[in-house]
Length: 140
Image (cartoon, rainbow, N blue to C red; front, side, top):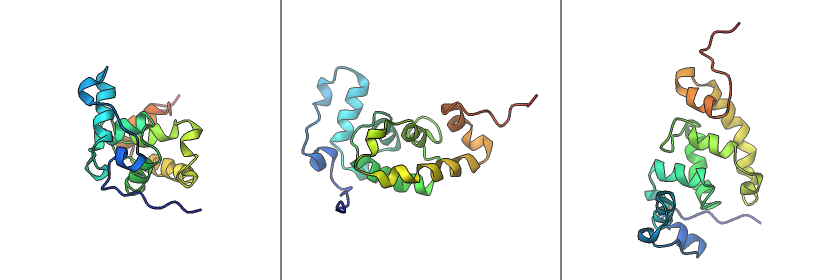
């Protein structure tokens, strides 16, 4: 059965029917940031908010629907930390996050290779996040 498209004009609370807590009552800054993101329409999320949600594997699969076109346009899309941080988080994500959107897991290898094809000065932080060798390092 084909899923209906995610309406990016809705918040995660509206899309899921779940209520995030009151950000003013959050026990720590990270929780506050996530709860605030859940209250905004997806299209209003900043890159940093997207990066935070992806790093926490939160708001999936709706967040995946929103972020995958961004990664297809630019696999080094930056979610507030470094170029490629969102893709790096998804590569390292637990297999269960793909349960509802296996088609996105299937495109990860192509996105990974496209990110690695970029110049070293653009993908160095991405490579480092995955413990890949530094292309600028001298070889012995």
